Image (cartoon, rainbow, N blue to C red; front, top):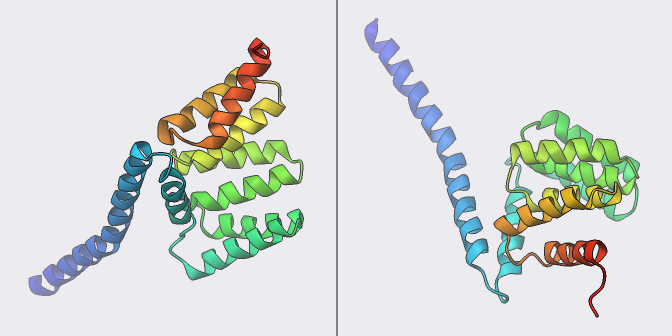
Length: 184
């Protein structure tokens, strides 16, 4: 009677370890990519950033990846309502998948729905604090809301993660020009 219990316990432990090992490996790979991004130069930073963004888009589920793809296609075609529907289904079925929230935030923003966009960007960053595109989205919205100091902090946070991000650098330069005036 004790032997079957031990076997079940060992099997449960082995399954738990086997199922969590790929997640730990993915996080380690992502950590290495972020370190690479910090150390990247002008010729390599965009390639490293793109690899990170592709990793963000991997849900681990073919069905969720399909919802992400369909939502992205609808967004590219300018059909924000359909994009929001696909991304909402994705968020409903995969609430721990940060890219679902980020994608829906982009669709909300394109549809002029700032409140829901901010909520989804916040949730993206709760799930993935290094999501530099979500940080950029927050910066853009803060600029539109007339909060340049807060927007500046968002762009500076991006540069801590992605020092050569051209969009963050451009945004910071734009904000500096707005607050101090144009240089002669």
